[in-house]
Image (cartoon, rainbow, N blue to C red; front, top):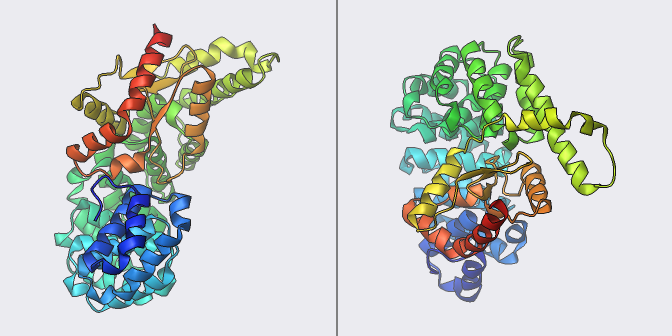
Length: 424
């Protein structure tokens, strides 16, 4: 097989040339790496070699152990490849062998089939997973519990006994949950319409003091979950009001809308300045865009220029945990930025001189990221991207360091040299 840093194209080329000699393990590794580094790239999804790889996996599905079955489903679901015949084959094989699956395999299999959107082809598998998981939840870690709940909620499959058991197993263990898992758990129970007041109360208590760890989308989704579940959590919403303004320049328009909707749903009647800030921030970005695109025109918003900029600049830059992790890794490999957080004269925050794609789950650069990048480039800055899904796929510091050395350091060195001149 190709080395650890091989690109999807390299792996697929190797499969095209020598695929008939691939063992079941080779096929599993190839699929995993294509998914891990190719993500939902449209070129990868449409590549005929990917479909050939899926067909090869389908033909030897009986040779797979439990982990290989779960990982194969995860790989093709993550890559967004339409491989229904492969999923049907995996479902048929896994259904009779769930006793061999460990908790992670059970959770990953459920999540994969839900992500692929083919739960209708595997009703027996979901029923079997629900039964198997229900009796073994004590063995599940926080990620497995959240993934299982997320899978059944996303698939829209009624599993009230399983959700009740997950709620019971989760409530006393929330201190071990990271921000993403807390958010996913709340979202899953709200999406499934399952009443779990003790669980939501525990999530509110655990999350309130840790909201600085949440990405903007997770803040919005957490508020959405509590509003949707009609759970009163005034301390949590007060904490969101305290944290969200520090991150508003990272919010997408949809996240503005979701957050505002959630506060309206819970009948929030405090902190009106919070909503004034939302409006002012949005107007400042719009005015900046208009001036860059049509510099010769005058705009009515210009009458409020100082007020809008002041509102934007009041939001102290607050790096996300993802930005902090990348900054730490950059120092570890010997690349030391002049600053880790810089604010331009226009109020735009440059996190570690990088633009990290928000963790919305999408493998495509979202509108918010494109908009901010476009503004920065029009203002004379160079922008380097480290997509969140590439970074989160890296398993440890060794993989992070290798990724930066192989893909980013040269470009970042040029950007740093040019941008320091601008900032001087």
